Amino acid sequence: MVQKEAIFFSWDLLTRVYNLPKDRLYVTYFEGDPKNSLEPDLEAKEFWIQQGVPEDHILPGNTKDNFWGEDIKPRQNTTVSDGSLCRDGSGRTMRTV
Picture 1 (cartoon, one colour):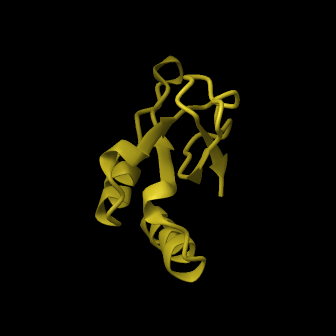
Picture 2 (cartoon, rainbow, N blue to C red):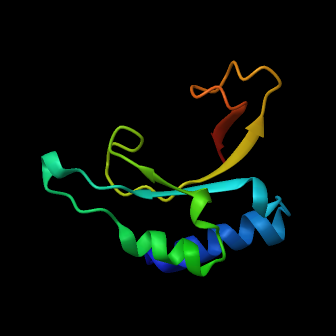
């Protein structure tokens, strides 16, 4: 399956079939790795935009997040009351869906 189809089907599954709220979903694309001469996967980012994902819900992922490179995982924003699970203290944490 090509990347564009994978993105389409995952977004459709999460939003239409599972009926997850779109405004709580975040997605990632591979940000690149200059040390290993790997370019960012801007094509994947553009595919997410084409699905209607707001740009502030499209986050870069690196080789630390996904050691085999390209990363297009959808994630759901889960809110905690005291922010203790979130590094930036915003009260949000991301969970891979």
